[in-house]
Image (cartoon, rainbow, N blue to C red; front, side, top):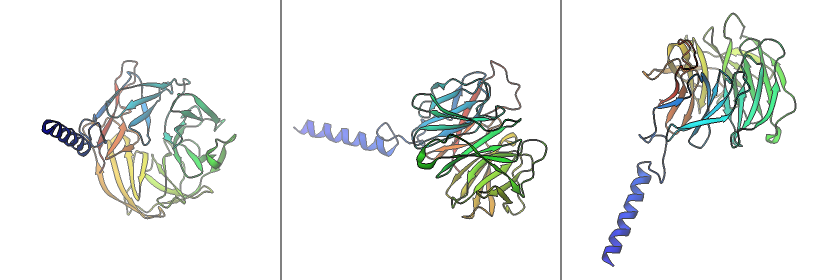
Length: 308
């Protein structure tokens, strides 16, 4: 009997340690066993990343639009959805397991079921040359940026249902398009009443209301040159500055009209990261390697760093 009691105590202690240290009984992304680097297929050319509540990341290919699903615990993964031969750029995942994908130069968007890899819906957003770059999900819509044309594309999601048509919302006000990459990353304001867009070629950050009127966010003299993907957590905005291998950390007011850069983070792991998603206490970024000529055998990865 005494031996049995000691054995039970040992089992309970082991389970308790597993939970406390993030072991199998309760693993978290802060566990040191989570890899810092996730290898992607050669020639994949990643750009977008999305992570939901589970420990899985979804990454899109600029080369052919395929979607790769990676297990954050092991770094292993495989192609979930074969691409259409056109790019996949920015992506967001909703609570229903639907992945909303910006189609870049194809001027389109599609929605993918992450359980099966099946394309649930496709949308022609522009019939003229375009670069549909990024997407954010709000309470009732998916909003896509276009880096070539001053317009947002809105998919209304009333009751969570996918719409039949897209609404085009022209951008007016302070955001003026010029040469190069214009509107890029997009996020919601902390109060959820507006949107935030970064303009890559000027480094400006702008608030957008539902009618498309833009106003420059006061960053107290700071700018975000090469600004790319955005991630909002509370009032903290993470802004990837791709070619300078930096993540800027900003603190915003509730309405998103003012903010300040409180920190800039870089890492030896970065090789032109484009956007950012989070899981647990870490940030995950795909390395697009824009300064490396792409080839079928070019290696690519996504990396993780502690969340500042």
